[in-house]
Length: 511
Image 1 (spheres, rainbow, N blue to C red):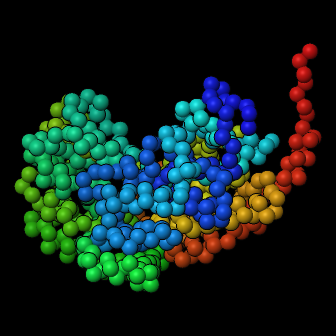
Image 2 (image 1 turned 180 degrees about the vertical axis):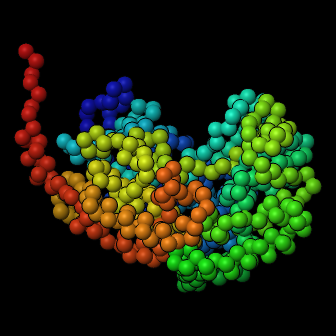
Image 3 (image 1 turned 120 degrees about the vertical axis):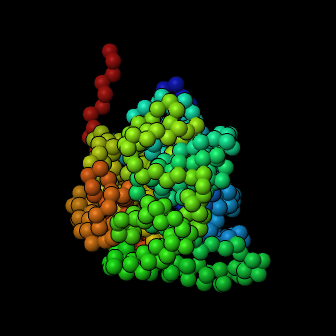
């Protein structure tokens, strides 16, 4: 294209624009390259790739899915250091994949996307970045992920606090901890990893707990030289990954079909708590009062011992307000602290983040999803032709690896792109009827899962609907996304588009 954007350079014209360079964005890029398609860009707002594994670098950051399963099937790594990899190793793996798969030529770093707008007259997406760069593509893929927008509670008086505050996703490594009184807010997956570090480093730690999590022992171990040598053999590595997959896949049954089976795991968790916490008062504070699995089940061998240290206090009274010198709880007690650390998670229901996505007829995705987010196959949305979301509504898991789900979605999207090309189509989008039937079926199934047993969790949106999790096995999701199901979509051919363009009134010339 020769026209220039206002105040910027000429738009870069490609077939596909991918937003995000974490596991999802790079998987999509790799899927295109495997099909011989190099006409795409990957836009990344930061100056480096990696997504959540770039941004989250707090002490103790580690994956809770085994390393050999939490990796691409098409880019295996034989020499993982441990059964559960730490953050630096996962980030290094992502960087290595970008090199190994020759994806860096497609990267556009520092490209913070502000808006993606569909032009029905040309069947193209115009993607505008904060720095003025503009990209025009036939297809837009949003792969920003669910763990990219930190959520900090709006606590009364927080702006008056005189000390340091930071979120786990933006860890302040320069903050002094020795001799300091620190408050940690939140008891989720990130908190149980960084709390042991704070307990060791700070003079005093106050953990403000709203709801205790169910915690199982982490079956972690460092791979020996012999184990790493064996895993370099492709057949051994594939068999080991398959065993890991099957072991995790079987746990879908208690989550989605028969929650009562989780009573066995619940007994294991309670035994783990009894073994690591001797104080009956503290143990009572840390004992959950909801069905195991209703909230995310966590794994740790260090969290309970950290809370049992003499310099740690677990506070269960709700926060009333933050003052310049600390936190006052609902029971009237003031906890003097020098720093506040938020382990309060992410806004997982904001699937496209700050990106303004405008579809056919000026349809705003933020407005469409204001009440509850839904998509067809968790990937496409009526009114947004040629647009795809990876890790969209109801694609999250409570039992297996999200990398598997990401690969399923990228395969489905690649099938849609093949359908566009093979049938000479200008655009496709799912029908309202197909999307409604699909999501009604999902919600009906979710009603019988462990996540619907009554607890308040981050799986539920503001309306109380579970728009986060997939209600079945990953094998079922694989089957549903293995082939692109064109019958669920309305399409416009390139010939029909050309006819529309020919019939469109031409602008009058100025006299």
